[in-house]
Length: 236
Image (cartoon, rainbow, N blue to C red; front, side):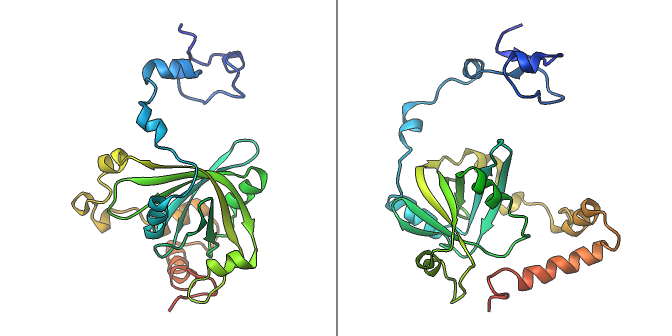
């Protein structure tokens, strides 16, 4: 058997230095060398496109983006990816090295924030509707109550309780192959609304608590969407 692969029989995870095997998958790659045998290194432009600051192109992209995904992990490496959205430009560029994101009301799980307290490393992927390219930013994050920062992320006079601050370490434009393959922005590829999964039904089945009916879950969702999107309640 090639040393770059492992079927994870008894003891195999320890033999290749893994803390644990990933159950149910055979022929797992266990080294960068094995991975590069299948996928050669990137060409120079793919490496050189990364910059270490927010230039005018990054600033414009962020200013037009109403949505990004925040990736974080805790001290043990367990990961979280959290969607974040607001009006285009809700993420503020403070200078060429810093971003600030207002804390809007959510489910209060604080998965990303607790991760950041343990491990400040984050990555953000910014999306602009209709554009297949995305902007990726890596850096270190913190939660801040700095009045000067909160003032800059105030929305229609509503000041958030805190903001996510990011010190930028790396930025680059991600090519649009994944969004092009997915046809994400092509309405003719979208499923009919009556074919979409029911969020209320999913919540009911996943929560599985007495009194949580599909109707109750739907009512709760609609109330939260109407009243809890912005700091202080409904945005007029």
